[in-house]
Image (cartoon, rainbow, N blue to C red):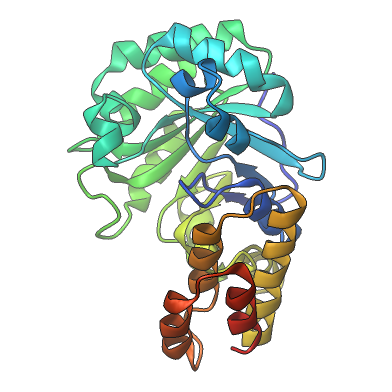
Length: 308
């Protein structure tokens, strides 16, 4: 199977502690053409870990969704993917996470140093699964290595590549290298999803025009504002930015709470984090932040946001 043809150019990135089912639904409501689960451990899935399997839940309401896995053993990854592939549109391999904890175990961006293992993993999953296999990667570990790696990935059976224009060593600092995204697009014939420093419609158009990538992946900008997908889509259509008001963000949070309740994802720490993220950048945000740090219940949290 090939990578699905998406209804627009925008994709939500997989993000730890963020990309749960309610958040994905909210982003799709406002225009994300595809979303991903956060990176899930293949070992934990195979062990039947309840927390991990909860994070792998998908709703019938969702459109295109990818299951993102991390691991380094091809057979372990294949077994985990087989358990869940029927529920997802693609199986995505994480070769990009720069987290020290993940890298020290040989997962995520650590695999960018192991070309033969990458080849083995992709070949094993591509041959063993019915759904298309995709990859999310960084431009390299300490230096840019992507051009050699993406050709190996395509030859091994990958159907799309999402590339973040930073190395593992850069983390989330410095300017994303859009030139490497452009070069990757020129090097392969499969869809390329560009990622890095897209914070509004203007930046999304710049990246699409410059790199000729097929799609744009939004990460940190979506954490604070799932409505960014609507803003960017409108800009790409007619070059007009939609202004998001404080009232919009309050409704966004209340919708998120309702989705968490509907799908049994209510977690107080997550709700507090989401409220803090959604309410950034407005008059009174600092005062609200202080208030939210003191609340102890879901009810007082919701009331504080309503009164923002």
